[in-house]
Length: 121
Image 1 (cartoon, rainbow, N blue to C red):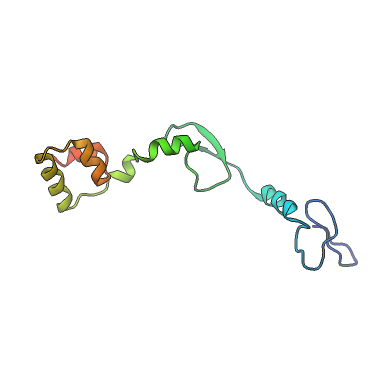
Image 2 (cartoon, rainbow, N blue to C red):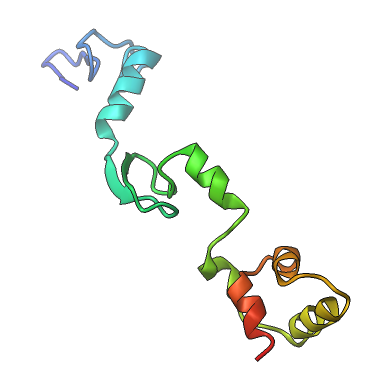
């Protein structure tokens, strides 16, 4: 933003004169361009497949929507390997006696298959 001696302000993007109500940019399109200029691009690795990708979002952890959607149901071991409660071990053993598979039990309890198998030790 340029400020001249006569107190007139100009747009940060296109240098048009601003009205008293416009603070930084003259239009929404210039504001969008200005916002993009100030955004930092981060280089990350995909949480699911490990491929590198660029993003402007701090929260984004997947390289593509496809990769995120394919792995949403599976979950990660960090999310699904939480501490057991007494009821968790009881339910795992009960459902196993009733004939449910370990995979089905893992999906019902939202745990990894590895953590279900550890309940039997």
